[in-house]
Length: 94
Image (cartoon, rainbow, N blue to C red):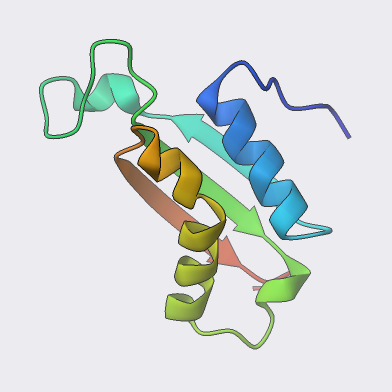
């Protein structure tokens, strides 16, 4: 597995999610450029992300529970200026 680049928010998000959800496949895409001029956008970007997580730990969880778990894991980043996430959260085989 490759090591996330911890100098970017995308890298920190990926590392945090890999730690929070062992065995997960995590993809993080910075969509900040698509939201320039929108609420929460900042000149330097790193505010809007699309995240896909396929995690064994999601098996048997509702969509709401999965979303809450991801938001809880990323709470520090929200406190540091991240504005929005588009989430795709699945268990393996879904």
